[in-house]
Image (tube, rainbow, N blue to C red):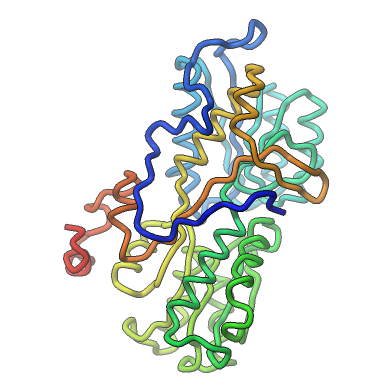
Length: 369
C-alpha cells in the first residue's frame, strides 16, 4: 500500500543523479558514532540474473556510494541468488554468520524470505528491503513507486492505441507472482486500462522468464488472432523481447507490431524503442534508488537517526508489518522522444552504446548521432 502519491514525470526531462543528497540528508563522510567506525560491511543480496540491471547498475552504484560515505573504509559483500529462493536463504545465512553490519535485501520471494529476515533481526543485523518489499521485521524499504510504474505503463499503452475503446483487445503479460512488485505494477496498470480497452488474455509469468512470456504470448495469439491484438502490456523489457519473438514467429512484421510496454530501460529495449518494435519502457533512475539505499544503510549502521529518518520519510505496509519507513523514487516513461534527455543525459548509456551499426539509421532519424 502506498502512503503517498508521487508525481509522474512522463515528458522529456533530465535527472540530476551525480550527487543525490536525498531530502536534505548530509553528504559528509565524517561523524560516525564512537561505537560504529567507517570500517563497516554492507551485505547486498540481489534476486536474479535475467535482468542485467542488478550487476550493471544497482550493485556498482551501491558499492561506490558506500565507499564514498565511509572514506573508502566501508566494504560491500555481494551475492546474487539467480532466482532461487533457497540459494538466497543460504547467502543470507552466510552474511549473518559473517556478522555483516547491515543487509540490503532484494528478495527472490518476498514471503519465503521472512524467516531469514527474522534471523537477521535476532542477530542484531538491520535489514533494508531494496526494490522489492520483503516480509518480516525489516527496518526500511527503498524502491521505486511501483504502482506508479504500472500506471505509467497502462496509460502509455492505452494512449498508443488509436482511438482506444473497449472493442480493442490487449494481452497482459505480468511479472512473477512471487514478487510483490509485480502485483503493484499490475494494480497500477489496471487502474489505467480497465474500462478503456478489453483485456482478452492475462498471464502471470513465473520468475519473470522471457521464455515463459513468449510461450504465453504464443497461446494468446492462437486464441485471439494476431490481427486482433491492439496492444500488449509487458511488465518488463526482458519479457517484451520474448513477446516480440512470439509475434514475429506468428508472421507479424516489425512494422506491424502492436504497441508493447516494458520496464527497466535495458539496452536491447532502448534499441527496440528507437526502431519502433517496442513502444515504451519505464526508466527507473537506478542511481537515485541505489544511492539512497547506500546512504540509508550507512546512516543506520552508524546511528545517524536524523539522517536515516530524512532518507525514509514515506511509509509502506507489508503483509507482516505496518508503517515501514520508506523512500519511494519516481519514474519516467521512456519513448523514442526522450531517449536523449533521460538514459543518455543521465549517463546510463552513451549514444554509441545504443547506436551500433544495426541502429545507425534509426538513431540518425532521432538525432541521437
